[in-house]
Image (cartoon, rainbow over all chains, first blue to last red; front, side, top):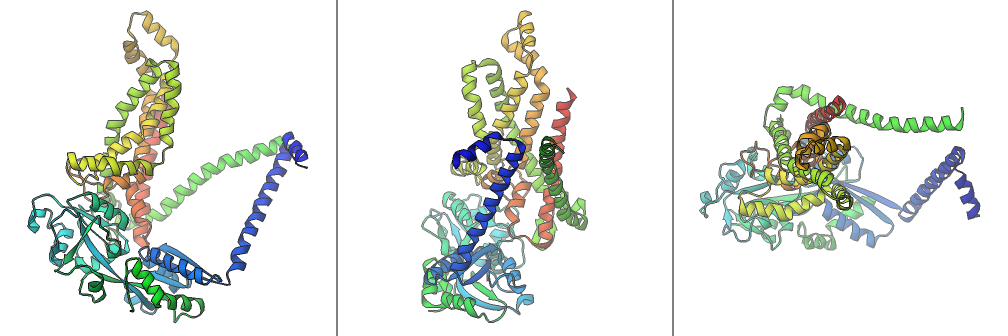
Length: 284
Length: 279
């Protein structure tokens, strides 16, 4: 059987070649059809969560655990940014939106479900003696008025300031909580993830940047703002100033699978999962 | 219609599809980007350095300047090294050495740019920060990495140009009493000049268009650079950094950045074609 196949293929007249191509195409098509089947029959319910890239890793973790417990459920977590997620929810393209910023008045018709608090930590190199920063000084740093560590009472050296890219949810939150309508200086270095900001600060003794408080580790040092450190308790009580909420957004009171997933997120196991990942839970 | 004719048609159609996709890309870049240029005006777009797209400022001058400076820096490193390498390989090395070195160089072109960027961040950036000052992520770092990245392009096209020079020229020159170096400098290089210039321009195109490695090592600051140690953002970095979340005018502005890039690269490629054709 196989040898006959090979013989006919060896003739390689154009006609044979074309029919061979057609056959291969048909096989691929069949395989693709077959590939779809298990996904459909394996899960009775599916849910799409889209939005903030800051929330995405946490939502993925939650979805993973939830799907382990509910094998009939299939949850797709997509990124795209807070605004994209909110937009997708309001026109019904996804079931739940994830947002790392507050809803603006035009979006208030949507239902917001706060799932966790996240602090934004201002970080420096561990060898940096800086431990506290006034909010005004932080603003002066990022508007470009303070450019030397000497202005903050430290040994003179230029400050290497690091910010996030325009459009990032973390940057948006930082701007609204710190910058008071002023623009971040164009002299600041720009990095496109919490991770790379942390990487640079960990390597450069003269740098200063901001990242999600959940991602601070031993390689960098989070400084206190107005004397208050970004500890779990201070974030929870809002004593620490730079706190934002992570929201899930729905078009109306969610029902069915969406409600069950939201309930799981707000349940004790869901919240402790978020705490374990470095966020601060909404409910005890 | 015979089978041969039919296959010929199919192949012709497939060949056309590459031109078709180029046309589509061009069409969509302009379709998405032109409204913004019309909205802000060409002058405010390319002659202002104020980039705050969510607040309605769309000046990309600093990025144009940065792109040009990073590319020039890459040329300063890459062209002499590349040319020297090509001359050595084409004129002064034994055939066996050439047979090992040329494929190795071409392998260099196959290394993904993110790997160059990663090496840059891990090795080069700390060196610059410690020994030269500044944040390390800088115009200099971008230029050095790009200078290395364009080497394979510059070297392999230059080698082809040099080996295309007829052996007769060399023999004639040597017969007249010139040394081998004099032969290379006075006879072979001038004869291969158009090919070498093409190599340089194509290397330049690669440097202008490179994105990932530059994002990783150049620092991406929006300010016009004041020294080689200052962080810079190139046109390509700007698009890749911000496209993820951009919507509305911001998105259009990134496509408009693409138009500027497109024009720059078209100019480079066209001049390469013209120079090659002149011979």
